[in-house]
Length: 380
Image (tube, one colour):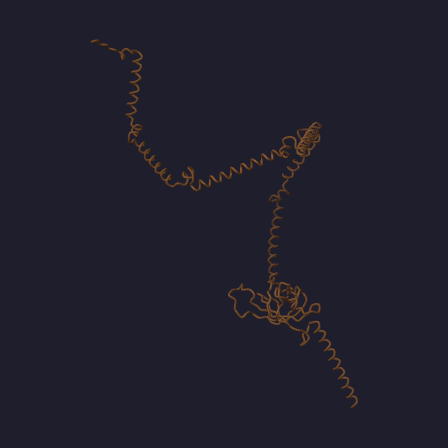
């Protein structure tokens, strides 16, 4: 009886030893794979980020680097300060533990100050995870406890809301299409009349028949279009015209190449170029002189400059114009000698009477000059 108990106790110790060995082996395997963190097996680095929303993210969620797991979420904390409005960004702090390796090297070496943290979904119905983009040489090595920037991503709820809006719009479009189809079947609208109006079909059939007749006339050489399409003389004239135009083009090309003719001389004659260059030089000199003249005028030099810039001359001219306006006003009112000459009707009547009397006197003088030219001689 004692021997049996001793045998059972030995078997129990062996079983415990086997189970313990399996447990240690599993712990080592999980520790190496990163699923379980054991003290002394990996070095942990704390990295923080701030986000406006952590929809679906929980403590212990995976932290990935370009999709590969390198750590987990340690804490999710709200900011100590209460935001001033609903749109205040990044009021939630996420603390992450980075302890994974990439290609045998610590993954923290790939996370730099220019890395970005993105909240992503592990699947359609899976939990959210933090995915970090690798840093570049432009950034600095991240230190434990440092923060990196985050990138806002659409959450699953936002996507579902957008999908619901799209479905609502599709339903509205479907209703519009159903209404449009009903109008077409009822023969309403342009398309409905096009499909169901018999008069439109008759008109279209008539147009097609007329087009067929027109094409037949053209084929038979009838009408202007028919003659244009079937008259060989017209074709010959067109060919001759094209030949002449080709000859003119060849002649022009020859003149351009040899420098002969008007066009050739315009392109090849150096004298023409020199004359044009001389003309341009003269125009430049003239422009310079005009510019100098304008400058003198602006400075008030010379007669024209004084006329334009001398304020005294402007004041004198203004006074003269005002005096002339006063004189004209007095003339219109009939004031003064000149005004009376222009406005007094008696002066006009007297002048008219004087003219009539002078005319009579001249007429009488021509008829009887002796009456006015008598000479009396007296001898003492």
